[in-house]
Structure formats: structure tokens, C-alpha cells
Amino acid sequence: MVNKKIVVMTASAALVAASAVTGSVAWARDSGNGTTNAAPAASTAPVVAAASTAATQVAFDPKPITWGKCASANLKSLGAQCGYLTVPLDYDKPRGKKIKIAVSRVKHTVKKAKYQGAMLVNPGGPGGSGLTLSSLGQYVPDNVGDAYDWIGFDPRGVGSSKPALSCDGSYFSYDRPQYVPKTAKAEQVWLKRSKAYAKACAKAGGALLDNLKTTDNVKDMDVLRKALGQKKINFYGFSYGSYLGQVYATQYPTRVRRMVLDGVVDPRKVWYQANLDQDTAFDAAMDVFFTWVAKNNATYKLGSTGAAVKKQYYKQLAALDKKAAGGKIGGDEWTDVFLGAGYFTLSWEDTADAFAGWVHDGDAKTLKSLYDDANPQGKGQDNGFAMYLATQCSDVKWPTSWAKWKKDAKTTNARAPFMTWSNVWFNAPCIYWDSEVGKTPVVDGSQAPATLLISETLDAATPYEGALEVRSRFPRSALIEGVGGTTHAGSLNGVACTDDAVAAYLKNGTLPTRVKGRTSDKKCDPVPQPVVGKNT
Image 1 (cartoon, rainbow, N blue to C red):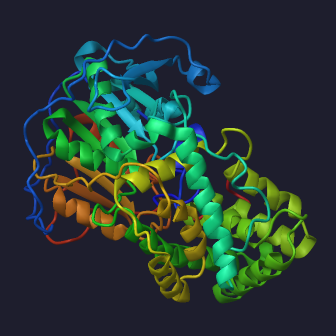
Image 2: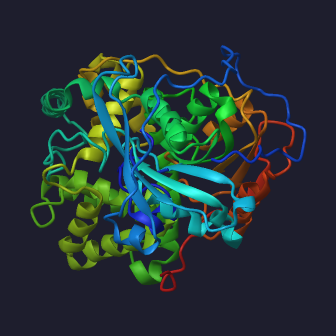
């Protein structure tokens, strides 16, 4: 759900680490809690079971992390350290089989008196690699990040963690069956593919598959806290990472010091409904992109109105469904190439260049390059997708009736055709997923400390209503809105209004003044649309 590609993630993290996103997807010494500078407004959240306020700990005492050199050149340049955190595969059997979580650390550079503790970072997905996100601190304005130890990690099953799940590295091969099925037989082709992938994951994952839920990751975070010798953690969560933060703060409210949640997941919608909501939101975001292309018609020559550009997009989609560009980029791949434009304005120029290059020059090579960048193939290359499914399919029970999926898809596709059917097939292995299924965790931030929430108004991956809902459940929170923007999880990307507020919060706990009502507390410009020819 949360980010369709498992390859884009946040705009700031894209600068840091070429990590991942889906349809969607890394890491204290206690020195006090931050506080808001205004009395919190009354919560408008629905009544939920009260979370335990006891400062309980996971019943597992980890060994200290042995820090050494990092493989990443970027982390090496920052003087980062890397190592492994050993945790139980199954927390119900803490003395049983162990697995390893890959962890990195960029240490604070301030004097001890100004040290603010460890900052864990998660990029989302689920399934996104966050090992290199210990480099994120350098993007906080005014060197405020220097006061923290920035902790990146690959969640269990992901990336450099051991073991890492992979099921079928060729699943995103070229010219796949059409996303939009024209017949019952066409539906069965995709259902068989989905069932086969789920079966391959069951074989590859074994016992690991039963222990990849959000609640398992939350326990890993608390064990990591203990391994770092911290009474409390700071946390910066993007996209699905915002959900990790919500659940952690609910279960361990006294273990949280400061928390930034950017691209906020709606806890009411995990995960089937969240995908349907995404479909509608992506259609709206793509209309904004098509309008931008039209405004730059002198460059792209694809239409002078958003409607004309959109028509051209679907014209090419239909043609590629019949004959793939270069024998590889069919209608499905065409859809996936454009998906990044629904996530980030940073991808607009590259996407529009590829669009124009194909229409005017028959340039299939650029389309293939963009597709390959987001959908690598080969042994182990499906790790992000496999882990996206492994978490979402086991977090909660998904509908197993294809009739329901089909009915909902047809209804949604009628008003939002851009991503609906691609999202169906992205998630369809959940129909057949073979693992233990958890219960939806309660999200109740009533005991959580001051929390900073960030969202753009037209965020398609995590629609804005989710941020408003979490704000209502976290009465000490404040929400920054990137007004009118379509970028997903774009903080620390150069928008001073937002980034300076992040810096102020991380420096001394100051939040924007909380206002009354179900609304944002601070309105900022969004991540800007690119100026053609001037973007770098």
C-alpha cells in the first residue's frame, strides 16, 4: 500500500539514499521531553481502547552492537559505523532462533552537554531499506542534526539484514499481462501469477513469514533502543514509517522523546481500504502533473491543456498494450514508469522527458531505463516487494473473496483509472498469503509526547485525511501542511517553512501552535513544481 514502487520514498531520502516507496518503502540518551507551545485541542478521534501507559519493555536483553566499517561509500564518507543487532525471530520464543538487523550510525558531533540522543529513521514501504538513512541528519537546517546519533537500519527481512526475503526476482519482468483485465480468463492469468508468488514466498520465507508484522518491527525498535543504551528514542518516520511510529508511541509512550512523522498513514485504513483510497488520490495527483506538462507545452509538445496531455497518456497506454515499446515496455510498464510522478515533483522532468521522447521520437530506451531503475530484476531484487507483502499481508486479514476485490476495483477504476488495477495486482498475493495473521494494533497517542506531523494536501500515497486523523489521536501533536502539494513525505527537501519547523522541534521540542478544529496547525509551501530547464 503505502508507496507503490518500493523505490522512491521521500524526496529528502532520495537525495540521501536511493531507497524505496510502494503502492505503494532507515534508524538516547535521555535529555528531556519536548513540549508544545500551546494547549492541545480536544481530540476528535473515535473511541478506542486505551493504550497501556506502563513503560514495559520487550522481554529480551540484546548484546551490544559490535560497530565496524560500512560498505556504503556515502556512509564511509560521513564516518558512519555499521553492525548487526541480534533479535529473536519470534518474540514469543525469546530463547529460540535469532535473526540479525543491519544497523548504521552517524554519531553526534556536539559536546556531551548538548547531546540529544539517538534518532532512529525508517523510510517506509514496508520493505524499504533504511540502512543508509543515518546520513539524514545533515539535511536538518542550522546543524541541528549534529546533536543526535542518527541510526539507520534495514528492518527484519530487508536488505542487508539476515535473512533477507526474496521469492522471485523475475516477477517484474517486461511486457507483463495487461493490468486491466478484459475477460475472466485475463483475470485468471494475474490471479495465477499472484498465487504463484505467494507460494514462492511461503517456500522461501518459512518461519520468517510468521514474524514480519508491524508489531515485530516495533519490538525490534525497542530492542535497538536497549542495545544503544537509551532510555528513550527519537524517531523520524516516513510513509509506512509513520505507522511504525504511531504503534511504537502507543505501546511505549514513555520510551518516546521526540518523533517526526512525515507522509502520515491513516490507522483506520490498514491495509485493504488504504489501497483503494490511494487509487483515487493518485488520479488527482496525476491530473496535477498532466496540467504541469501542459503548462510547459513549448518544451514537451504533448498538449496545451491537462486534459489533452492526459488523453495522450491513455492513447499511448492503449497502443503499448497492443505492442510493447522495444519489445519490453508494454502498457503495464508504461503505467509504472509514470507512477513516480504521482509521488514526487522531483521526478516530473524525467517522466515528461521520457513521455515526449517516446511520443515524438519513439525513444523506448529512456522508458526502459526509468522502468529498470524502479523495478530491478534478478536474484534477490524483489526483496522490497516481498517484504512489502510479507508485512501488509500478515498485519491484518485481507479479503479472500476475489468477487469483492473485483467489485471494488471496477467501482474505483470507473473514477480513478490511473492506478486502480495495477494496485490490485500489486497486492493480490495477499489473497493467497500463507502466514499467521495479526490483529490490527490500537493506535492511541493520548499518552505520547509532543509529536510533529507533516503532510502535503494532495499526497497520494498517504492521503491527507490520515494526517488529520492521527493529529486527532495524538493530542500533543501539531501538523504542518504543504498546501496544495502532491509530494509524498518531502520534508528536509529545502522548503524553509517546513524544514525550519523540523529544526526547531529537534532543537528544543518547540512545535507550531496547535489550533482548534480538524485542520493543520501550520501551513507551508509544498515541495515546488520544477521549472523546466532550471532543475538540477
